Image 1 (cartoon, rainbow, N blue to C red):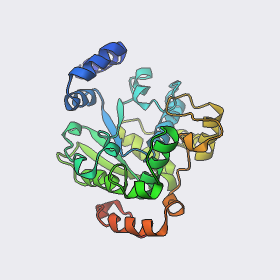
Image 2: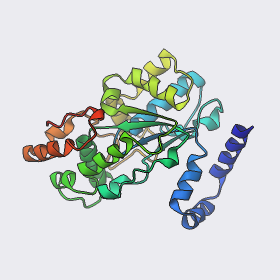
Image 3: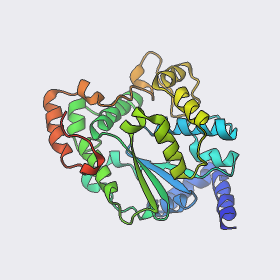
Length: 287
């Protein structure tokens, strides 16, 4: 009964006029609003921006299309899959605030908003994350962010910021009902295994082998890059300027790509900073 009531409330919230949603945003405090929204979902995927969640989204929607016949216009709209098949969980993808807009000391460690929910933390090497964020801000948003090396060493959006975020999730208080970490690097090395694992944690029915294989094959980076250029990925998350690869959502997605983009002295300084990251993540400080 409670589940049916919550789902009806969720449908009504989605259907609210944009003007009403904007008014709520202006009047209701952010923390209260965020907690109310999360209460409408069954599980959450959290990540620092540029940790690979768009790729994860497209694989989940592809797998659900194969196994459950769901049809979605937006290949990243995991949050809306349950609207087409109520057997599927309501999953929220969230950055836990906007950590890339704040200095490390201001990144919250209080995770009470996630209490009672299964949570998947998608982690990525802070150096690759910060480099990717610099390209995103500069290429897609046209922001004035300075040089790459200065950016990754800086407070806002730099490696210190990513480390503070991941450390906050290393031992969150209070602890979510279930917390599982998935590293982007592991997802890249064995996407089939980790995709099935993530989907089960989030409450999806165990995906079939054919669904997993199709999701992985259809969403390789080379195919996603081609589909974005051709306009085949119908989502506001994709697109860019013709002839400017840096303005595209799908860029490189490389593991350890920072080694090819940062000066050796910058890499050494970041190696020192990496010693402050909780070692349970398993990232080596050495360049």
